[in-house]
Length: 269
Image (tube, rainbow, N blue to C red; front, side, top):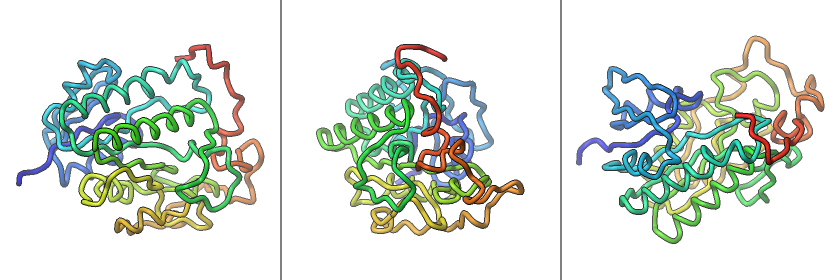
């Protein structure tokens, strides 16, 4: 069997730029984004376009063995209208394209913000969804859409509730849900390769002190995080005790949970 080809969406984004070179070591990539993308020495196939357009989505998934869907609009102040295209329509267009194109595997980048209004504490995969804003709400929709297409059409799907994927850990809240690029790629690979995957929910976290999330499901699929959050503290790291309500310390979602909820009818982007 030759090298598998993957579609990586959101490849120009913050997380996409971190995982792309690691995925290149094992897969042939087709990279997609709204923003311009440069080809690399690995000769990735590049696609620039709006995945909310069904024709673009169909072209994006043609001939791939799996999709890693990182693309989406993220900010604490996004409105419902802002997210409709990139976070709702684009996901549905991709899932439909996978259904009709026979793509067998789908990895969806969800977020800890689907649980953002929970108080800090250890949460399992079964925790009640409690989004902290319209971004988190769009990810809750995305998880439900993935369940629909996995269960009705047999697309083997993995939902990754990603914590904080910055290269350095800047404070004590993020330290409890941080994930390194190589640990995130390990989770992605489980979603793409493990034979037992049907529709799974994993937390995208590394080894974290006083973690917010119990990642037992990922462990059952063989996940063994390699990196310790405490070993990646930034020079200006702020400990948990120094954080305030303005930092969102009362909720898992941090500043996203502390930010005012905008009028859903407006558009800011």
